[in-house]
Amino acid sequence: MARPLESQWEAALRAVESTERDYETWTRDNRAHITAQEQQEILSIGEDLPRVWHAETPTHADRKPLRRCVVQEVVVDQQRLRGKGWLQINGQTGARSAQEILRHAVRSREPSEGERGQERLGPLHAPRQTDRPIAEVWHTAGDGTTYGQRFRPQNIWDWRGQWGWPNLTERGLRPDRLRWDDGASTIAGVVQAVGVHQGTVHPWLALGRMQGWQLGPYMGWHIDLTADQISALRQQAEHVRLPRKCQVTRGPQPQAAPEQTATR
Image (cartoon, rainbow, N blue to C red; front, side, top):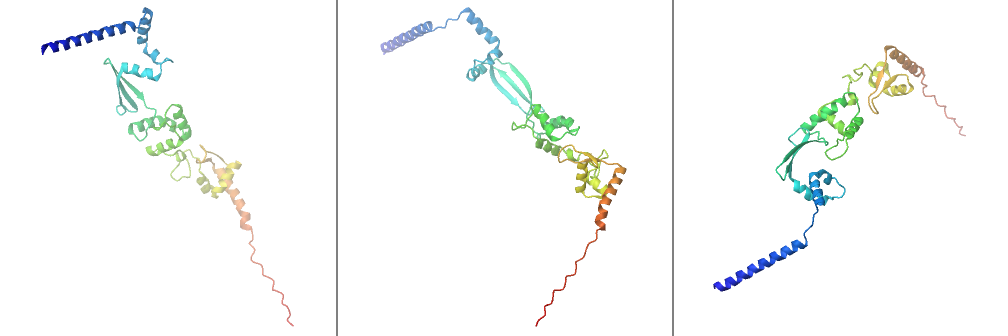
């Protein structure tokens, strides 16, 4: 019983020795010979990883194992900081690096993002800029919506409604809607002061009989009128109405009697 086991044991040892000799032979024949200069280049590459990472020759497939050799995991938290994203990079050696990244995709419905939006939109809203140039300013600054799209005037208009900011078309308009805070009259104010239809005011503005300005298309008119101008416009409107009042309306004319034919 012991002799067969001894024979198997010796056979296994000879197989191990043969495998080790084959491995040594293969290693000796396929060993990469690295010169001192090549060794120095490898060491310099390890010391300057950004140069290797941004080089033109490595592909994305080459960078992935390189990243795994350095980084173990990345932890991201979007709720820790107001208006920013927080991330921590844990390296393979135990080193940790925390960073804060400013969000360029603004979500107005999130309280922290809404406050940041109000802080940035306030200085642009104060000088009476319309929604379109404000959207262009935000797009130029690199901000966008959560869907990666550029800001549109509609987005700015929605924000004004959410925050309760007055619409730019009615900003500075008095409660009676006849005058602005700067004393200028609206179209309705001119209609009431002069006594004409609003369809008359627009031609007068086009003809230059009164001076006015708008912040933009489809926005309210600011018309500057003095007491003398109002009096002159009233007289002009009355002068136009007088000929119409003096016109005599002719009644229906009597019809001629039909000729009677004599019946024989």
